[in-house]
Amino acid sequence: MNIKINENYDNLKESYLFSETAKRINKYSAENPDKKVIKLSIGDVTLPLTKTVIAAMHKAVDEMADKDTFRGYPPEYGYDFLREAIAGYYERHGVKIDADEVFVSDGAKSDCGNIVDILGDNDILIPDPVYPVYMDSNIMSGRNIQLLQANIDNNFLPMPDGLEKKPYIIYLCSPNNPTGAVYTKEQLAKWVGFANESGSLIIFDAAYESFINGDYPRSIYAVEGARTCAVEICSFSKMAGFTGTRCSWSVFPKELEAGGKSLKKMWERRQATKFNGVPYIIQRAAEAAISPDGYKEAMENIKYYMGNAKLISELLKEKGIWFSGGVCSPYIWLKCPNGMDSWTFFDWLLENAQVGGTPGAGFGAEGEGYFRLTAFGSRENTEEAIERLKKIL
Image (cartoon, rainbow, N blue to C red):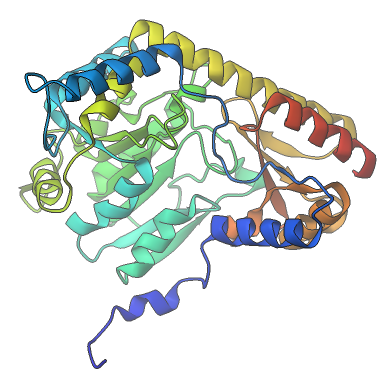
């Protein structure tokens, strides 16, 4: 062929982080069929959907079997019933959002990657380490990326101090994946102040907000001034176990403008052209997930996962290994023992304990020497993994 291709893809790492870890774990398992590998690597949930969610799905399935209640193409922005339910979810947590500012999608990862469609050639600020999609989606678009160093000295929470007052696209994730670090309201207020003063846009990833324990903002819109400088992306994946069901949302406030244009209207246009909406059955399930009964059940599941996190944290404390997370996040971010680098520790852990995790270096250069474990496994597997780790750490 003689067509031109997007040569920015040449600047990506050859393999996506989680694909690479899965490939290595699968290879080890194939070579050692007699050894059971416990995966504490990819952040996928293991508990089933709750009874309230399942009941809503069954009811919606029955509706699809009746010509009077059958639904065809869903609205590109989400059914009104779900948009209103999400606005009500915010209100219960003290934040005012209008239903028409909510856009339902099939995953926070999708929205994080797709939002670059409506943004021009801006300088990009991305924390290091952080979830890879922010970096990769902007590399694909050929953007100029500047890294915000997150490390043990700033508790893995970079701040705008010392940044040039010019417009940026700023990615923030709180609770952070992978480190589990959470911004306080005062810290987010500094970022909001910087964004408004510099004419920047914050893309705030709140996918893990339901894990927050303590007096931390669950939404950036809890901070005054955020409606003029921030888009928020959130998800049902970890809150309600929708990793295989796929539903999320993004908030584009009406006040959000750039170059005299409404970002909300631009996102509406983008979604209408490139997205056909989330299925009716899934949206009814999502509505049920944030109903009073559904949310109570979801929090019981989160309590279960955080029980796993507590067990892992207690082991690391016992062994004197530094870590963060595990309190407001299902992730435990630990310093690799004995000065090992991230991938060496990955191989060592797999070989000696048959436990899979995620090397910190895969989340950015500042993640080198660190490692992420997830609490999303079953209690039985988590306890077995801990017993194995006790023997070798």
